[in-house]
Amino acid sequence: MNWADLSALMGTDRPEEVDAAFERAEPNVGVAVIGLALTHPDPQPILARTARALASDNPALRAQAIVALAHAARLHGVVDRANLRLLRRSPRGNAADDDLWTFVPHRRLPWWLWRHQLVRRCRWHLWERWLP
Image 1 (tube, rainbow, N blue to C red):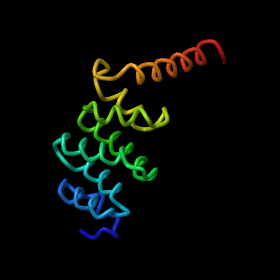
Image 2: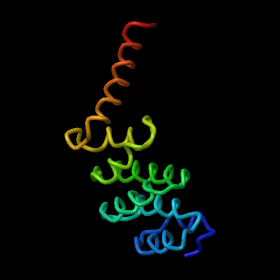
Image 3: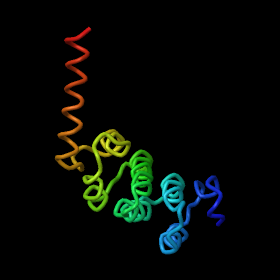
Image 4: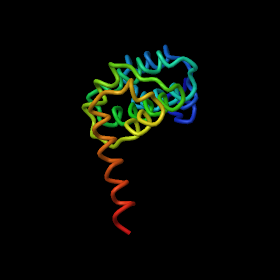
């Protein structure tokens, strides 16, 4: 793959290429993780790479992992414990929080995400009902 071409990376569907990019510390590996989330038919390889990216010390890579996790939730309706544990360290209100709440069955989501989403929704309903 051409790792300088971001549009090519968005089309990657091979987890082993993403793993090799992690090993080489490619600067655009986060884009490849997003591409994998959009194109790979099996969510398990996607979730393994998003967890690896979420565990990174690089803030840009963690932000791209959150986007990839949001896409995986939207397209496959799943999340695993490893990603939830790592996502909990991120600030609330990100794209993954919203897509997990929308596309993953609520019974599979942790209490901290419930708390964030329910408080947010209650505020919205109060605002709509009581304030013009």
